[in-house]
Image: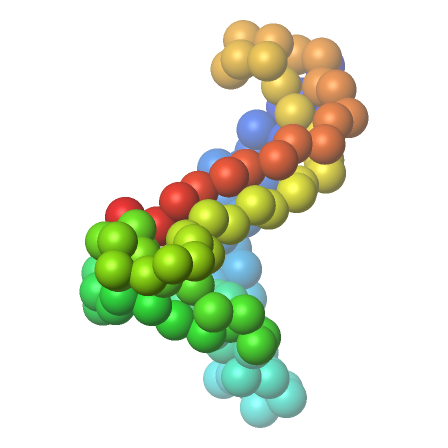
Length: 105
């Protein structure tokens, strides 16, 4: 039960704590990398729209853009390993590996 409660608290408060912690580090003159600053800002609430993009040398297109192409490259798979719960009421976590797949629109 302790693991469940700790994980619940972590999920609820970590992002806000992290943002404040990085801000305090900057105020105190500690060295804070640009990557850490970006992570502390959290996800953008609005995004620009593109028909394609490059990430670490890989090219991706939206499905709309691919309609006029012979090749397809609009899907992404991310494998995540960690502790999961079946539901918000489940107190027993299970170590698992999940694949998340998304196709650009």
